[in-house]
Amino acid sequence: MKNIFRIFAVVAVMMLLSTESVWAGNDNRRGTAGATELLINPWARSAGWGSVSVANARGLDAFYSNIAGLSFVPKLEVSYANTMLYGGKSGLNSGASVNAFGLGLRVFDNGVLGLSLMTMSFGDIDVRTVESPEAINGTFSPTLMNINVAYAHSFTLSIHGGVNLKIISESTDNISGNAFAVDAGIQYVTGADDELKFGISLKNWGPAYSFGGTGMSFTFVNDAANDMTAEYRSGEMELPTCLNIGVSYDFLIELWKQRITLAGAFTSNAFLKDNLAFGIEYGLLDIINLRCGYVYQTDIFSDANRTTANQGLCAGASVNIPLHKKDAESNAGLSLDYAYRSSYNLKGSHTIGATFRF
Image 1 (cartoon, rainbow, N blue to C red):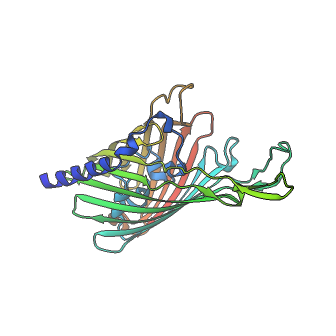
Image 2 (cartoon, helix red, strand yellow; image 1 turned 90 degrees about the vertical axis):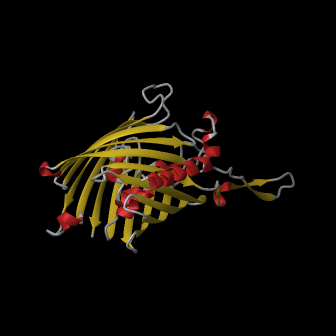
Image 3 (cartoon, rainbow, N blue to C red; image 1 turned 90 degrees about the horizontal axis):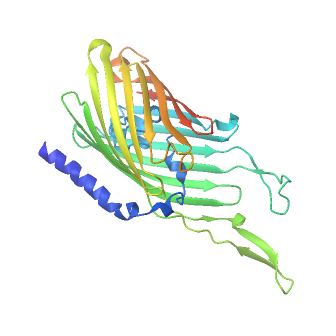
């Protein structure tokens, strides 16, 4: 047992030391990172209680919370989720829609290979120019896409780890930018019924990136009456690296297979205020799961100093439907998931998802 705790402590210290320069930033860095869509959770199960499941994320939801949880995919898991962000395309304040698709396959007795794709679109946006700000000169549609390839491994019955490699693409009709990032995480499970869990994950670590394309150039006439083309230089942007530390505990009740899970997580953001999240989940008969959570950050209640649109309150539910009698014991079947996240001055965000487990 002592050796297990030593391994967990060494990994945690190494991850903290490797990001020492990131956490040495100041308030002037907040809001200057690129690819901030990486901080949006597209998965309904974990989003329903504030992404607090750093220690107990299981299956494809682990792509966001802690990639080590991917190691709990039974044989094959397929998931899809759609998020109407701040009202979605039908909202008055936002036209953002997020779609996520994931696939997890157990390739070894203790190893799982995962693939996920997240896309974010904003609908058609009017093109207006400085010369004619009132006129509409066509439309454009920005697209953000993240491709993830991950591998998670169960080293023992108690220690699980994973690594996720992601490619980030952001583009419009004539400007694009691409980046590369890495996630890594570890989970430790203990207790007579595996009721106590710890987790730590480092997310979105990678080099800075910039934009390019024909949209960065312009044409002018020089003093010699010659047509000239010049190009703006895009500044480099760093990725929104963050470190997550979490713990959870399951209270198990034999009657009707009830479970009450309490979880907490701390997120240290390199370019945003740090978050502190708390959540609770109630399970009944391994079929119904109800959850809620709250994500707090400094000045979240101050109209003058608030730096996030999120209000902090989250809620969600899942219904697990066994497709066969034998699936009831193996956790296989169909899961239908829903999550809601509240926000200030905007419509709330809704996520609906479905997961098949085989």
